[in-house]
Each structure stands twice: as C-alpha cells, then as structure tokens.
Image (cartoon, rainbow, N blue to C red; front, side):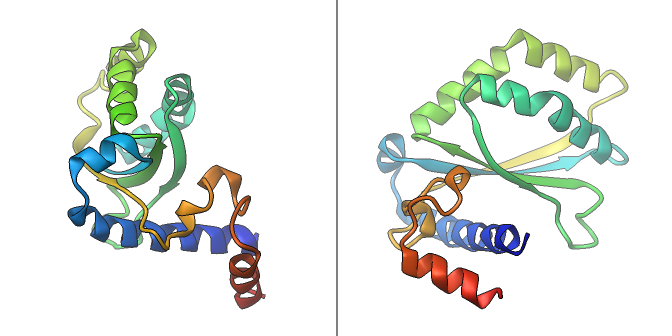
Length: 166
C-alpha cells in the first residue's frame, strides 16, 4: 500500500514537471513521441457522482476498446473543487494516436448511447480542460509506463523511493 501511494506521488510530481515543460515542446515533436493527456472535468452542480458512475460503469471499458490507456484518476482536495471536479491522465503513443483514439471514441455507438443516457436529465459536464504533455528527459516516465509500475526503473531509483517511505 505504501508503495502504491509513493508511486502515485511520483507520477503526480512527474506530470507537474512534464506539464511545465510542455510549453517548450513543438507540436511536431508531440506527433512522434509518447504523450500524456491531463484532463480536468468540471461537473454541473450536483452531478459529479453521475460522472464517476459513467466512468466506472462504461467509459473505462470504451476507452480500452479504443486503445486509450488510463494512468489514473484523482479527486481534488481543494474545497472549491472537490465536489465538482474529476482529474485523470491518459497515456498515448503519440499526439496523432491520441487524436485518432478520441475520434474513434466520439464516433463509437456505445459511447453515444451512454452519453445520451447519462445526460437525459440535463448535461452532467460543465467544462473539460485538457493539456497534452511529454515527459522530461529526467522523468521516471521515460523509463517505464505507469502500468508497468517500477518495471524498468533503475534499481537505485526504486531503492531511493522505497526506502524513503519505510
């Protein structure tokens, strides 16, 4: 459990660093290298649980069908955001792959049906904010995919992370 918590901390730090480095990366570089997509959803008042249910019961499966790899989901701790926002990160092999996956997802008949049903009583989403990011050359994400956990990380890095959490 401590290892999972530490892994989550490392990923969040790496994502923050990657986000600030994104301003320096050209779009052409993003088209040919792995990109991470940070998405922040703000639900309409009273609808955050409906959004969680839609992801839990449908969206994750449909993402997988279109090759969209979810790195994780987070809920904000700030009082003004915790009852309205959902934050998640996707990993894509390239920006072009991300665009293709989103196009296929949006056209998927199952997704259209799920979206229509979840919005039957009115829209559950107020806004979507998204940022594409690339990992810095010193990011742990350069060594391993999140889904592989510590798979290819250097042993010294793993020892440092694990020993500081003991």
